[in-house]
Length: 190
Length: 179
Picture 1 (tube, chains in turn blue, red):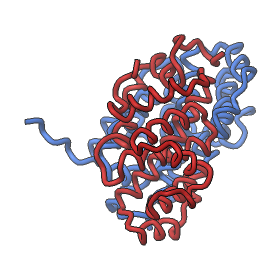
Picture 2 (tube, each protein chain N blue to C red):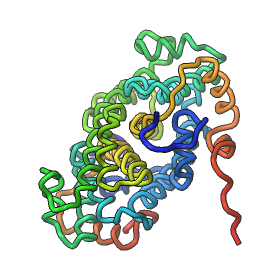
Picture 3 (tube, rainbow over the protein chains, first blue to last red):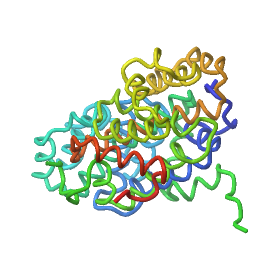
Picture 4 (cartoon, each protein chain N blue to C red):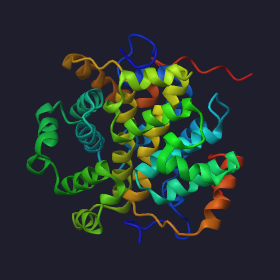
């Protein structure tokens, strides 16, 4: 049972967002820019970052759904997603992404843990300032989303097929478009 | 020196916002709704929650700027200091104390919040809406704090700058830069 009376039938963050559509709007817009809009890091890479930090924060819903979205972007490679969570240094991902995941793990512990050397290592592997910025912000943002989802004790089904199907839909449509299926319609301006 | 080439002369999160306006817009809007728009918790109470979480996360810029905004709303800087060091003995309502206990749990991790923490807040009159916003304010500052420190932004030690920033935030909110 969630800590507060959330709308029923909407798992994870969707229940919380439907409870408070005013805050849902910027929350969805932020994740859309960070994970779905075109960028020099692929959508699959950015979803792997979101999945990894959600895994470190032990948030079942977020790591499952973002893992499924990552897999949908990566030709359905669920094994790669598992490898990144368990031991990203030995996963089949670019060295640049490994260096960015090192930064992510530091941000998850606390912003002050990130060192000049962590950043220099990512830069040596070709990471740009824009990519380092977005990596820090994705990691920071999921320290928010994960706490929001778990802090309200939202419903978090253990149903791999559900996450797989939803993951494909979010990968295809993006966060803002799909939010219209569970948020109340915005009032028409008069 | 910040970890990346941020625009110069802008302290704390304003440098991150200027570097990437696309993400700044929803982040500003979220803070504005949570801290500034009318609500059953006063802006002063909500700024205290933001300040407390930022202090727990050891983020100098955020705890100082939001502490200044809280002091401006409350007309009292001493209460802000007491909330950071020992909120249970600060001159604030029992309801806000119960909500700060929830905020402290969220700062550690969402799964730390117990049904008993929430029941205690409800016994002091907290509504579902207030509990929701407390959890989301605490969670959001676990983002803002990590963003500000994770980029190693410039965080000047200049009390008058923070006092001015606090006044701007208290009066105008979060949608536009203060300078």
